[in-house]
Image (cartoon, rainbow over all chains, first blue to last red):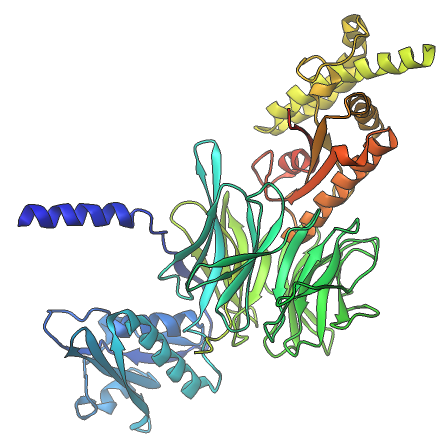
Length: 432
Length: 179
């Protein structure tokens, strides 16, 4: 019997060898004035000695990664209450924590669980919110992220983005050959899943607004082609394979169209494609490079990169076409724009004095702020709540991801133990 | 006829020249000093060895390492798609070969250095490969013989985040296909 078990285990390990490595996140610059909070390990009632997931640790890590909270380290927790009647508020007041989170996980049989939590205002000695969720084993991390969202919303007034995902591209050397992989992982780096692996470059992942599909550029046929892929089923469709460039796909907010760059008429121009009919509409007509379209959240206009003025700058054009208006004027190089979810800001690659950094432009005031301090920062992507920007950067000779708060005060790095990671794209909120 | 001979001579000269610079270029991927050597070798050594080495005016072979056709990479300045004078001559050698072998096709792979935005760099690589295509077509190559693809910064020839690597990565590679 034991032998059989071992054989099974071995088989599974081989299978698991193909599972991609998870990103690890480290906070590289903390934020002053972050709110102190205590998240007490959740109680556990079940048939095994430990709960299947450490819910409190997931919540604590989420809140910490947001830059808005400093959870108390476990060793400083003065007590471990798991129910409201066990809470002694004066103990927590002495530690100067503003808020306290407690909870319990209960096994309900047949692989089911109930996760219950309560958030308290320590100084007023009262409960702010409390919920109970049924969950399967596979749902436990999502429930923990959902609790983080509820706490974040209650205490900051803004939506949390903990139950979201990121897409990114990794590269690794396999002998002489390079291997390119497009992955999707939870926003805390967990649960990485391969979307596509190729021996040729993969580029420019872009989420559909419902978070269910991804568009990307693949060179698997030794030429640039754009595919859309259903994340759950893996089914994919080649939507653009014209002569020359097929690049920079961006979904319209209503999910019906794709903006893209094609050079079929001789040089790179911005087009929109109706995804039902694959009919194309050309938006730009200029001898310059026009590329990297980004839809405004209302779907009425697009911002794109063009060097029609001699160097790459951002321009805005109506989704129906017409005259393009220049939107960036500061610095010699502004490219690769991403709209903030409220449509008021643009994140971009900003080059000045030999360094390429991530900057944010306030569209109304025209104020540009450089947020990062790397040399080769690129591919900025807003979190769906607009609080953070994830981007690609380098450290030593490795490519890693980093995230920065929109005010530039809080930073973190997301890296792989081995290999390079690039081109992050933060998903929208889940529609489900 | 004399003009043709002259231009062939020039081409052969460039061939030797190109041989030098290609070797230098490969070396230079590992260090800065090697690239400094490259320009010295190119300007200093090329003229004398070139004349000595040129003898035959027979048609160039793609597989002959001493043929100018063995040099298949054109380099560019930052954010530029201008082809230098020496490279113009090299391209006319490739064009002559292609015009004489209408069944032969090439893919021009355009590349950029890693700085800046990835899709804009795809645009730059495309602009470079289009510039090379125009020169080939100007010298009599049929449009259907030339295919282009831009890899932007996705396939660097040299690793590293410095001028030396960037110079080697801003390039168009002439890839003879279907042989």
